Image 1 (cartoon, rainbow, N blue to C red):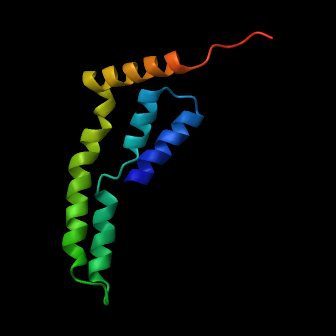
Image 2 (tube, rainbow, N blue to C red; image 1 turned 60 degrees about the vertical axis):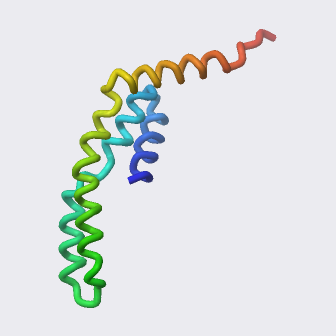
Image 3 (cartoon, helix red, strand yellow; image 1 turned 30 degrees about the vertical axis):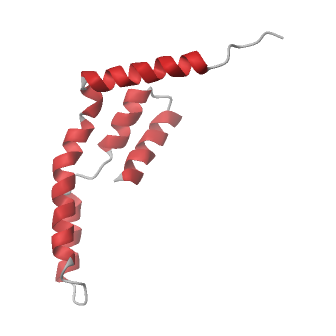
Length: 101
């Protein structure tokens, strides 16, 4: 999940999208569990695969199904927007002023 969030963030940054959009792009790539259910079913049905994999896969799918959509909405919350604005103001204050030669 972390690598998908980072990948979406970096891709959006390269495209010139502002910080809230970068976060939204990264969180939008987070898995929702649908494909994981198929993979887990195949893994459990395959001979030689550890039977303890099924509960782990089920827990992973449940976690991503619940947290994925909630986290994708994170940039829409007012408290998140305030954090972003504060961070942008702090970044602008610490940037050096352009010099004229």
